[in-house]
Length: 147
Image (cartoon, rainbow, N blue to C red; front, side, top):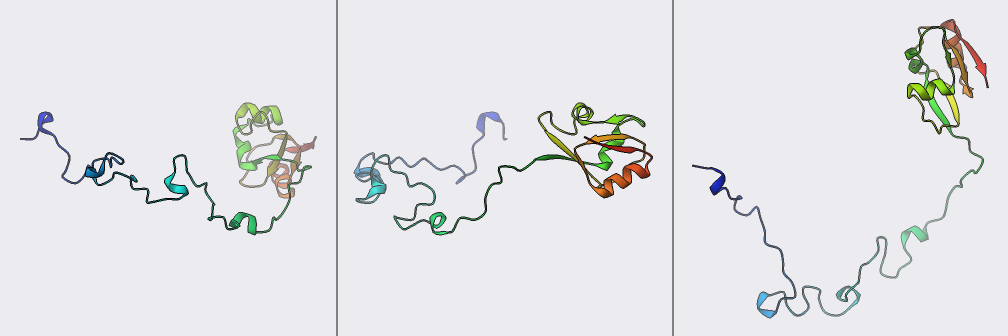
């Protein structure tokens, strides 16, 4: 009968660790499975990722592309369907969006996109709004104020 006192792993499921450099009788003595001479047989040797044996590596052979625009403006994106959590007639501005958890506190600019439907009249104050989102807000009886 099988119980906790006679449990054992399946045969072949556990392998012994290879103990290298422990004498010729072990079969892994002398060079300790590192081969003969060369960089990889020395202590402290580790080849960094992307090293191609001294050949010019691929990441340096390929040309550089593109640039980083230092004047780029990041917008936190919200959709029209996200605004249904606010009560009808309320004003939705940056502070209200942060309080509701739709955007993070450090988001500098907010853009409203038209994904989804709006079923209540709200006053929206955001930095940017798409034309179709503006149409959906005004169709629902709300109004958009630019900042």
